[in-house]
Image 1 (tube, rainbow, N blue to C red):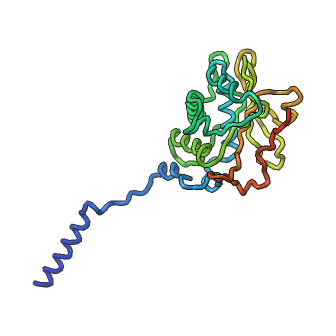
Image 2 (image 1 turned 180 degrees about the horizontal axis):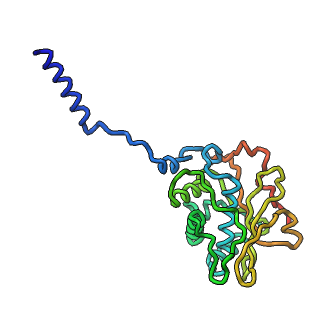
Image 3 (image 1 turned 30 degrees about the horizontal axis):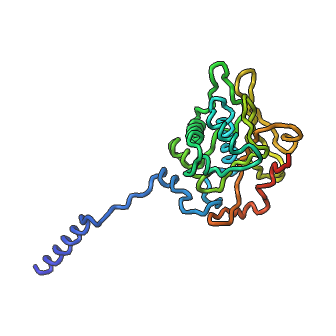
Length: 260
């Protein structure tokens, strides 16, 4: 009888412990949560946490920026770039789309357009101009698994703002008066670092259109195309470490460095 009481007491204690408020069930992260946590604690510039190809992501940063600035209806954004980037210069992408954005209109338009492109709705032409983007960098590719469009947008922005030191470079400055042309290109990562495929945005019989172009020094000078936007990485060895050891042979400041 005594042994039975002991067994009963032990079983009762175990039952109380299982029902205790301190006993928590561990719920595994969903695939969405795992993907959105990628790179949260990684060092900037580490390729281990990148879910997007460097050149592909930089091309889209430049391509969408060019689309915003080509549109003459975006007078505030165009004026901002004319004033601040009228000569050869560059800007941190964080100052355009990140937490320290200097122009909220540009930031909001960029995120809206990125969302449309990732969602597959950014390519539709306007009335009377059904094929206004014949050439693009291809749909933004995010290796994030089966997640929502908003989740992919978050990963893409994380790639540009958190995982890397991203900047836009304007080798001949920005002169956005009237209906003009704008060319977007990513810094090359291939063997030939002096040229890369880009996308020229221009007026095609009253319609906005794009065409694939080869961008190098000859594309710009002498007296060549203006308003070139280069998406590139910035190596930094200060408080924020962006060393990119895998690109030790690349000086990202030399592509289209002029003078023009």
